[in-house]
Image: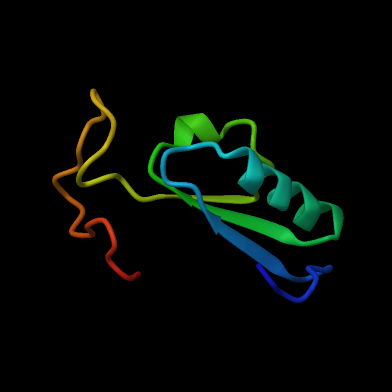
Length: 83
């Protein structure tokens, strides 16, 4: 991935649908240490507790989640849908 460096006043956003990814957590930490704010879009917010996030956007899953995952009937987004 090639991007300009994050600095004070910047926002770094990431998507971590199933919850926690070590790579995403590392990128969030780097952005925070550089003075940026962090935003994550996630389907399972309980698993994001350890990530350094300023804003957490919860989009309930609508299809193909792990067994036992409650599927939202209110959302119209499907896997691969553009936001």
